[in-house]
Length: 260
Image (cartoon, rainbow, N blue to C red; front, side, top):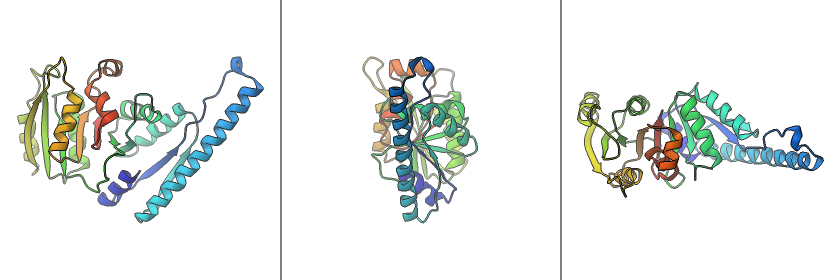
């Protein structure tokens, strides 16, 4: 939330918040009973109360930034909330979601729904990082893929005043022969008047962690943004094998822009 407010102030853009607290989904008659119905009713009341508290906190924090917050309150099932955010995302340039703590975090379901089904970029904000009003130094994870290409375009469109971009390739993470070299992409970005550095890091497949290597590189370069294509392979394979997107979306300390 604070990162969203900071960016809204820094870039002078319109922002809409969703104050969400998932409630239990509808229960079929097979599980129906007075006890179950009572528990569900109580859970829904609690979810609505939580959503109201989240909304009040957003309004209070926004007022400190001098922003009149536009807040939608949601206390439906997680699936319904995810669909609501997905549809709203289609009418905005960027959706900011707080970084999930794990694959099972409720925000993870919303994040994946928006990333895969909205057609719009997603910015994951790390609660461990101080909010910034404008991004200055970005690390672009480049592998020549279509998602990485789209991520590059979104980065340049959303943040045209970036001062420096590091085009970073992870060696040994995947097969890169036949893809557009990072140097060629850097030449294009330089023509836009942005300072560009081409870099690579070597990660051994057996025991290396490319996601951690990217995050460490970004930290060492004092970057305030990481940009990547989201899920170059299947979500299931990413989850099982611990792919770069899966790792960074749960662990990044730097704001992470993802495009699928």
